[in-house]
Length: 328
Image (cartoon, rainbow, N blue to C red):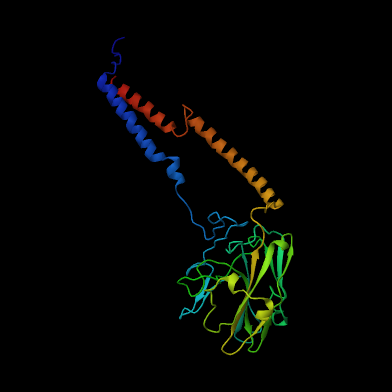
């Protein structure tokens, strides 16, 4: 046919050039799309860590929650002389009318068999009740004070105080360990009374009342450099009350509880956990469906059916077409 020219065969140099183009195309695509490992390597941090390093000889692992730092939502204040540090507590109340500078806490700390703070995930439907006297009738979380386990269900702040341990902080070791109610505005000479802790519910027999730690530290702050199980005393020894004085306007008590069961034979079977697992399985199924949809979309784009290589094939085709066109 007049004026027409047949394409010349691609010689060795052409093949080499074609290979180089294909190789560069694959490199470009790889750098743009990345690899699953690179994408998945990004991690996010959380204020709460609900699982700790696997512990032996415990039936519930430690609940590790870092204490809020300055600038955090739940950080409140620290004394200029570093005698105390305070964190926001949703169960912190001020008496109205405000009758004086008397303040304090009634707290509960639950420990596992190793002595580490936990939130009672393995003692659901169990309640601790601490009777309180008439001086706290105005407090919405007192008269009596009740604590329902697990603390992670139904409480804005499961743990709100760092009562034990040592660190550079004015008190505590930088990790929350107690669940408290707080009160302010009590008059001088007011006596705060509390009764013995009563445990009821499904796992009441699995929790031991180790004892009570009562302090009235005045302006020196709570002494946290103590072991709660060793420092706890009987109810009779602590007396079940404290009275505000001019130089002692703060007082508090921590009820120390500890799991008392054999880790070798204990088996935890919570129906709510089973339901959660079933829901999780359903959710996972939905996620799998979503992934399948994504893979279907990818297969539409990828002529070879291999996820992530659709763009590479397209570049290769364009490179061949361009190379052939230059030889026309």
